[in-house]
Image 1 (tube, rainbow over the protein chains, first blue to last red):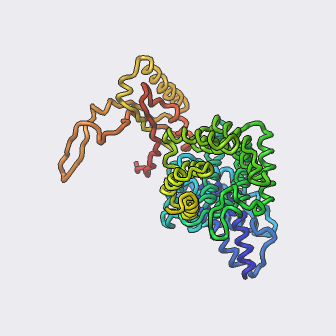
Image 2 (spheres, rainbow over the protein chains, first blue to last red):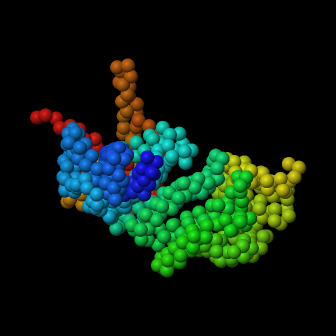
Length: 417
Length: 123
């Protein structure tokens, strides 16, 4: 019975996005699609013990789910328009409940793209986009998403309800956007995926530093996006996530302490992910349409391909941050460039740049600004100033793991504090 | 589906606009009205007199209380509306992006709201 549950669960994780995308198109409703899919999975759990697991489990579930939609259509006569469309659509793709049925007759190749673009529609607020993407395409359950984002489950559930209602009431179309809108809309999708990854990679609050399941989900979504709609920035984003994720095993010590990049045990980096990421960086750059994700990926590539921290090509890193600051300037990019300059041209030079940034005030509440400043001051032996900066940084982050790291550094430069 | 496009702009900026800016704004509206009318999707479009001409009515305990001016003081004020019959939200949003709202350094925006479908009244 355990095998059965595992089989069903693995089908769910792998295929749920594809199946539900087709059901939404057929029914015009996220809720009906979800209901139909849940019913189909329940039917699988009920019938497969006797029948055995079909050769093509995904096709079986897809077929049964589409049949459920027809049943709902017959029952829901009050929603006449929807029901008519429903019957028309699903009768056109009627299938036998037989093994070996081709699931593709019920899922157009564009369906998952339609779903991604709809979930990430800018008419929905970003939190709603993230929740909906993870729920429908990511195959995460509502409690799983709530836990990952440290949000109470009813809040997350309401967020999903409101998002689906908005899609319906405002009639957000279930379509891949037209050519002229595509660049902006694709950027929204990339932003949502990267947001999910970052949430998993560096938890903003709470005790943990990393939520690996979110990183994995984001990477899977990135892979799906690249597969369905090849684009150099999407490839760059995927490369960036793979390269960051490759260091996951080395970022936190066995005692739960934060290990900065230059102290990480590089043997614990995932070589497979690195190889994949490096190959994708090259592939993206070859297209000759440079963009911010590709640049960030190239920077990550420089870090992950250095055999040791001391051999990092900081000059190149600084140059790439310079490029990035030209096409997507931001105080954070400027800060990173300054840090790279500190390690390539000299600590004093870098510190001057950082202090100049600090004077503009944009970074005053960014804890990494103070932590970076503190780090350089520490390396210069200016302990009291470093201590002040570490204290500022501490006052600005709520993450327990980061706080412990900062306190450790603070203790190094001010043992009596 | 019909959408109401509520046009908000900063009245002070609008009144401070130069003749050239006003002409440009009029032209922008005319273009949208012309095209949507041609496509048969325009259901209405009218400008409103500024909020200083408004009177607000609130009924409390059966009595109608009047105040001089709009229901709330806002940075941007309702300047007019369009009603367009669009295929979906994306179409409505594309038209909205072409409607002028800002000038003379002032800000503006368009709120796009679906019009609720009411059941057909029996004849």
